[in-house]
Image (cartoon, rainbow over all chains, first blue to last red; front, side):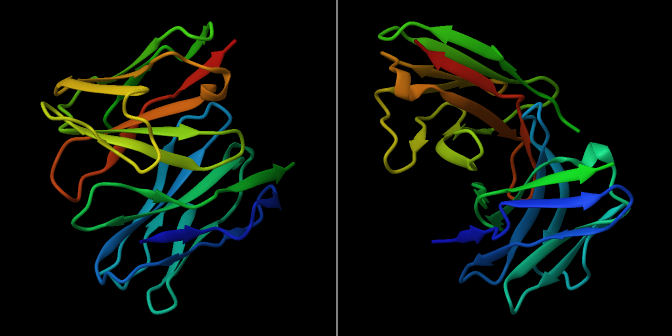
Length: 114
Length: 116
């Protein structure tokens, strides 16, 4: 079974600084999708970024980028120029290409200090 | 992006009663909907997957007679917590997908259930 691990329960960053959230996963599949979701205090899940495993190029969405290391089964999220609105719980998630269910990591609570 | 509306956002019910939570896809037809449960400061745990017009597929350990899921139309899925107990108090979140294997899942805003 696929598992997703986020080893950092909590992280903090100064406003305007850069922070990296870690995620590792375990799968025997060669093709799959990886996601980072943000859950702010409102509890609404928001998709931050997505990566297809067959793509070698790391995904980027404005201030958010990932470092996808397929061989190491690592998928970290880098947030540049952190803003107060980035404070949230961040979840890493995995989905098989042929499947529909998401498997979530335990989450990392990010605090942004002014 | 697509909008998924979940209702109610909060509900308090008495122990032993049943409560229904609705999940609607407002601007797309959702062939598949998912129901998650989330405890405070924890991750989302998938409870069940429902496909329109067919029975839901429940995850191991989830009581299907307690958590009734109905996906009668392409825009509506409901979760009914039957004979609720305080331990059922939690945050319940639904998500919906349009269909096809590489489409995104969109999430509702969640329902906080408190059983007293």
